[in-house]
Image (cartoon, rainbow, N blue to C red):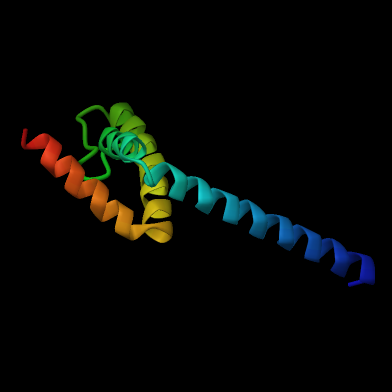
Length: 99
């Protein structure tokens, strides 16, 4: 590699790190409010993170798996960034469902 390539590589790595930090901060911001946790819980539920995606129709199953894939991505980010707030969210949802 040339010196230019090394410099360009360092810039790309720094931008990726900054983008990741921004995403982490966004997740923390959303999860830090009760309203945000309700929205995330709803998305996880609609995405069937904790349910089967099976349907007799293969196309419906494929669609459900696509939704689940996005929800699992969100779940993974939440668990990586603020697992303690996930537990808070689950507790709040449990209390709300028992009303």
